[in-house]
Each structure stands twice: as C-alpha cells, then as structure tokens.
Length: 262
Image (cartoon, rainbow, N blue to C red; front, side):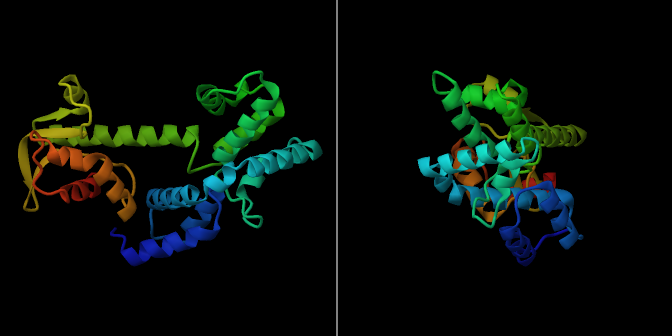
C-alpha cells in the first residue's frame, strides 16, 4: 500500500516519546495495524537515528560518561542480574534516552579504561560487542548482551540483519533481471573493471520504465524518506550520474526503482 506524507508524519510523531525497543515496536504495530512490520521498523529506525545524531554529543562528555558509569556500578552493586544498563539507556524521565547498544559501548570503554593498561582499540571494542563473552567481567558481559539483543536500531545484531536483508533484495533483483532476459553487470564485475563506486547493477542495454530510460539500478532494502534520498544523492547517485558509462536520463529513476524493488 502507498504511505502518504501525512501518515508518515503521524508515525514519526508517535515515535518521539518511545524508546528503541522491540516492546515499543509492538505497541507501534498496534497503533498502526494497517502498516506492515517492515515499514514501521524502517521508519522507527530512521527516525531514531536522527534523534541519536542530534543528541550524540551530550552523551560523550566526560561528565556524562562518568555519571553513566557510576550509575551502572551502583545499579549492578545492588542487583547484578537486573537489566541495569538497558534500563539506564531507555530512561526518558531523566533524558538519558540513548540507544542501548551505544550505551553499552560507552560503559564497556569506560570499564576497560579502569582494567586495562592501554586504552582499548576500536577493533577490540567492536569484537567484544559482537561477542560479549570476550568481556573480562561476567556481570558486564551479561549487561552488554541484554543491550545488544534488545536494541532494534543499533548494534552488531542489527548490522547483521540489515546486511542479510540487503543481500536478499539484491539476489531477488538479480533473479528478476535474469527472468526478464536483461543483460547487466553487477557490482563484482564492475569492481573488477576498476570502478570504485558502483550501483548494484548497470544494464548493458537500457530499458524504458513508465516513459523513463533506465541505465542502472541501486537497490535499497529500507524505507526511503526525504532525508535518506538526499543522502543517497550526495553519497552515491550524483557520482553515477556524472559517469559517462551510466549516463542517467533522470536521477528520479532511482527513487522509482527502489520503490519497485521493495
């Protein structure tokens, strides 16, 4: 079904006061039963990421980090099995309201600063977040794990899901192109030819869709709002437009194709 701008705004407004948890997503589905789970999750994720970008800096001041860390220590000191870190991240009343996975990263980095001789590298932190069993403290490992599995917008679990969904849609698109007997080059073939930035598929023989000439297809397995369209234009589409071998007729084709592919 088609989602109108008014419907999108209504959903986005509803997201202002809810934490990024699966429980909140279930409530959202109850509020908007006519919308698919995938649509609501995509809008939920994109709107929350905008919120995180706006508030990111305030969570990374030395004062904020120390406050969060002391609250974590006090909480697990009282009850180490309680979801202290998850509840801290999701607090709206005290204006914490930070993605659980990102809160887990803050506390993990702060913990390792106290327990390691050298500051932890980014790769070490990422590895521990992907596999909390590597964290040299059982209580913290459990706290981080709870944050990771209950965060539907950020974290290694979400990254894996997004990667899998993106790959699935590319496979479906490839199968559709083959079914239509269209000749194309995929990303791997284009990179082998020396291209750095490439669309998912370049059609060797352009086709017409609804009166538009299509030279290439970029698949995005997510909901495309105005903000994401502008970002894709800047980061990807203009470079395809300017390349002679792509020679796009209209940049708007990308939006039509993304909608069609989904």
